[in-house]
Amino acid sequence: MIKQLSMALVLLGAVGFAAQAAAEDVVSLRGHTDLEQESAAPELKHYQKDGEPITRDYVQQPPLIPHKIDGYWIDHKSNKCLSCHSWANYKEAGATKISQTHFEDRDKHVLANVSARRYFCTQCHVPQVEAPPLVENTFKPITAISGK
Amino acid sequence: MTENSSTECKGLLCGLWRALRRPSLRYSLGTLTVVGFVAGIIFWGGFNTAMEMTNNEEFCISCHEMEQNVFREYQDTIHYANRTGVRATCPDCHVPKEWHHKVVRKIQATNELFHKVMGTIDTPEKFEAKRLELAENVWRAMKKTDSRECRNCHDYDSMDFTAQGRRAMNRHSVGLEEGQTCIDCHKGIAHRLPDMHEVDPTIVVGQR
Image 1: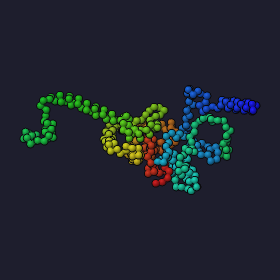
Image 2: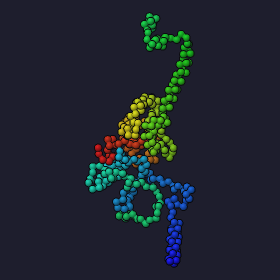
Image 3: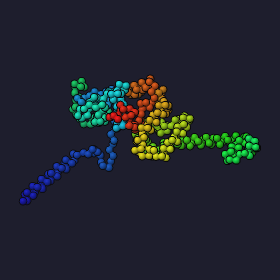
Image 4: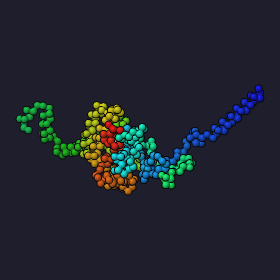
């Protein structure tokens, strides 16, 4: 009985020690900054002001936005992106027109206008900043698309 | 007027008219001129000062209709805050700088006082329902004046296209050639756009 009890105590102690060790490895999003101190803010990134279309890196990648979109408003009353990228306006604006796939509902029925599920451009299309990757990765673009 | 006609005059207005028409017997021409001149300066200065008091942001947003709708939207835009710290306040865009255009606009504004009293846009819902009409009024006025208020700061002649982005340079060159005015393209830059289904169906989803 006493043997069993001491075994249990040793086991409990071991588990407790392991948990403590694991806790030391955990780092909050705040980093190692103390709770009472303010961490230094990361440098602000600036969106690329204007540029040529960016080559896609993989099949079915939503094309990236090669320009700033500050103040571009998208709601049920208007969509600033469409003032250049809609089929009616792209030629005059010299912009890329939105894909035909944006005129389909989820059952692949073709609609007369942009489908509501494809209306909020920035859900998939995003502007770019010149920034190093946040985590190391081994991603390589597909040669068939990028030529690299 | 002769003495005969004065006896016929009985009404208050008629008496006043008579007094105004009669040459002064008590004051010299010099006194009248100097007093008139000084009174003129005070009146003119007072008039313009009073008008300028109605010509600043503080006055505009003293009405909740402006403060809670258009002013708050404008705070998110580049005309409110930007890297160089130049701000265009309400009257910079909505009241002409030249005196006589300004007075005309101020007279038109009495209609806005009427609608303030009537509470035409005194809730967000009412404002939203009227937004298209209000926006179209401003667009029409700017189109008519060739975007005069924009050009107080944004002058085509002093615009260096080469310093602009690729897209802006292209569009501005075309715009200049075709005689377009600022508001033709730059709608909804300082305030939210109204429902654009009727104005430009190419930039809205669905059909009505």
